[in-house]
Image (tube, rainbow, N blue to C red; front, side, top):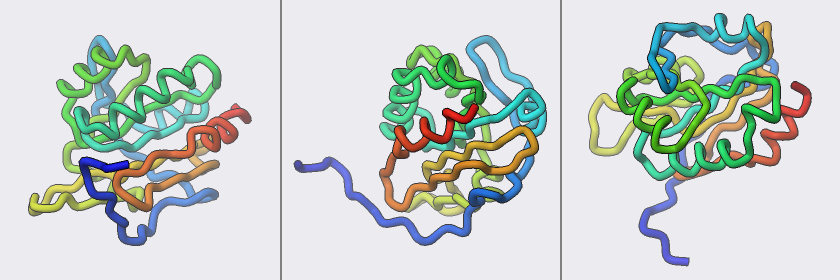
Length: 171
């Protein structure tokens, strides 16, 4: 199959792993109606959270990831709250939520500080000082312990959705 893009091996990442405490952060959390600052610890007070880091809104990996999550109905099938994180601004998030028919909230992290804190920073070629998170999934329990972690080793790369579901089945 001829691809319209190059698959790129990403450098090793010293990322948050299973058993680690997930770094807390506060960023605008966007839903279909509005956005407001929220922290990861605010969300984990309500129960486990599946953090889905993805490329900026509008990039094809974001579309594929969120279509798959929507089609698998993770928000309806599991008790963990599914939340996205990307460098896109709240306006782009609202547009993605509307276009994809998503029922998931998205953290806006334009400076990629959350991606850096999780050890998944991916500098963008030809864009000095600009980075985005590499695709990654972290299942964080109520005390912010990481119960499941997957981090892309290539660009583009996508989570093993079945493995994520197996981790979610405990919640």
